[in-house]
Image (cartoon, rainbow, N blue to C red; front, top):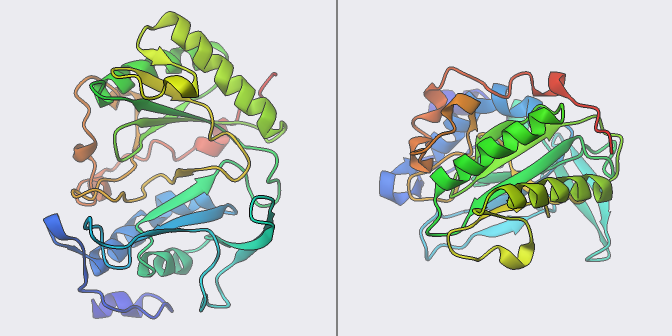
Length: 290
């Protein structure tokens, strides 16, 4: 742990505190995980205003957690922030922007186990550079059912000349994301994603595309609603607040199949994966014709 402290200007504390009690993962191990994954994380989240879910005493059911948009008191001067006015709360919010390893370590040191990103960058907040589908199964539907729907979605998107990428949510679903040139408003991209979901629902009895149907047992919701300004998804390689310390993990499409299990992708297994399926994601930006 002393070596860890010498790596960074962050004032690291309480590295032996247990964050994941069931598997005895400590705060120090969480920080080490984010350091190892930084080369895969930082290019994706650069220049995006982040939202944190913090678990200062770990993830046990009786522990406090909170969702945080505003940079906390005591944020170091070297941490980059972006002030954005919130129409909802009628106040300015100072979002954290993480473009370097020290900031990522600082977030982990804050017990920000989960990190969330929007679909646009700080220099063009109203123009998304990603389309996003949250493929979300409702029990008794499973991740295997979500995988089946995601594969149908992949084929439909490729037929349209788009290049989809996929990751596990780290919980029960899958996230499909398409890099695009930031030329359109969220209103237009959300309508586009919604239409794809409607078309998919016509082709598969498993799929629902409307919010009112999300809790129908055995269905998979092709969720389009996050395609809105400053709405977010959990970042690729973020930890999740599960007993097994699962990770939202980018996959090769060949890995998307029946039997896929979120607990196959954890703090212990993901750092050993040699592949980086999202490595060239920004080289695959599509021009969206809508």
